[in-house]
Structure formats: C-alpha cells, structure tokens
Image (cartoon, rainbow, N blue to C red; front, top):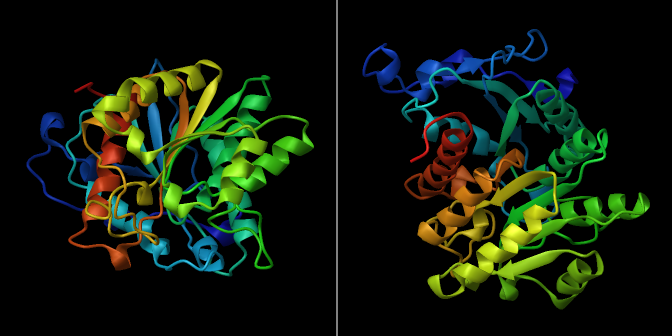
Length: 333
C-alpha cells in the first residue's frame, strides 16, 4: 500500500436516515464497514459469504490533461452520499468501504499504479471491487489489475465500456489522460503479442473522429452506437453482448456517466444531449451483464458534482451501484 496515494474513509462520512436498528430496517450507512487498508486486513469471506469493496478514485488529473472540465475529483464523496440511505438487502454478505486512491501531486501514472495494486489486493481477497470515480483515467489502472489477476491462470479478460467516447486517443505531450486508457491497454496487449478484447456501448458518432474509429478497428475492438438502446434494436444489442462475453472468462465493466443523456447526467465533463436514457433498455443490458456470473470488477466514472443539477448524476451513479450490490450480494428484483 502506497500511503502517499491512499486515504481511508472516515466513519462519519456514512450518515443518513435511521428507521431502526433491526436488520430489516437498516440502510447502507448503518451496515457499512470502513476499512483502513494501511492498518487492517479485509474481513474474511467464509462459508460462501460474498463481499463488495467500495474504492474511490479521487482524481481528475486525466480530465485536466484531456482539456476537460475538472471537478470529478469530488465524485467518490458525492456517490457515497447519494447511496447512504439505500436499504440493506444483502443481509449476511459484506459491503465495505476501503477508502480512496488520490492524485494530489499531479502524478497520474503513480496514482494509476496505486489503483492497480489496490484493486489486485481486493480481488485476491475474494471481493468484487466497485470503484467510484473520478475521471475516466480510472480505466487504465483498473483494467491492468483485472488483467493481472486473470493472466495468472491463463484466463481471458473482456472489457465493456458504456461510453459516448472511445477513449482510445494516443497520448499527447501532456501524457496519458482520461481519453487514452484504451490506447494504453491496446499498446500493452500488442507488446504481449495479444489482442485487447473490448466492447464499447453507447458510442456517439458526432463525438469521435474518424481516426478513433480506425484505431478501434485496428486493435480489434467492437462497438455499438447509442441508437442501439431502443426497442427496435434490442435483440441485436443483446446478441452482441452475449457473443462478446461468451469468449471471455472475466469481465471488467466501466460506466462513463457521459453515455447518458444530459437530462439525466448533467454532472459530467462532456455532456451528451442525445445520450442514452437509463431506462428499461439500458437496465436490461446492465442487469444481464451483472447476472452473467463473469463480472469481476466495475467502476462508475466521470461524475463531476460541481456541474451536477439537483444531484441527478450522483443519484444515477448511485442507482447503478445499487444494481451491482443487489445482483452480487442480495435480492434479485
């Protein structure tokens, strides 16, 4: 644990409404265990118990380098606050908060490496990491951790990116950014004489240059544009997802909140006036993935509270966290 880039979550962060102390009246803030990874071991998962570990990535250095609107550094705190009052439906399983990886000194590369090491530790202890962004520079460190865990047993990682943008831009003079994660991963795969397996969903043609489309094709990536999230194209969307995950052993899912319409997600660096809606079509796909049995780690990226309206984006991101926890730890609704 590199303490320079790690801050544990203080217990008083988790506060909210109290309806009682009985198990069936509790809310997340009452059941949450805050773990300082620099001092304490993660609770053991015995006798079939499952666990999810919340880990913040309080960083928007990559957004700054990408010339975006900064503010996502406050995203993890806003997401914690937005989900504090959710009801507990996971009973015997564990939901823990292990703190934040930060980037206080502008050294994004070191921060990403600290993120990688922390996610690897969580996975090795049997927890599903649920990461709270932070800018989409979260992808590189997060994906590297998932790859390292799977490669030890020669298993194949697949990445699904819900995003309006490919984020496969070649790094410029400023270095890696929130828009370069998939290029970095593709270069790493190429150096290993492998091909990166990734599927981008919700892509906006008016937000990606021709070069980016060519780069995705060059590296064997797959994508479907945003207009596939409608009833007429749902069969094709689900078939593409099913075919993709059938050829993977483990899934890392990253949700860039700018994939959603600005009406639902105004609090992001780059809003999409014509983004997808977080209704039944999206939820059918998201829940299918969560129940596939292959998801190993997930992140919610690009929440910028300084640009949010009535906490809409924070509440949307929190609702996705509730879906993840419900699917992995608790009830199926």
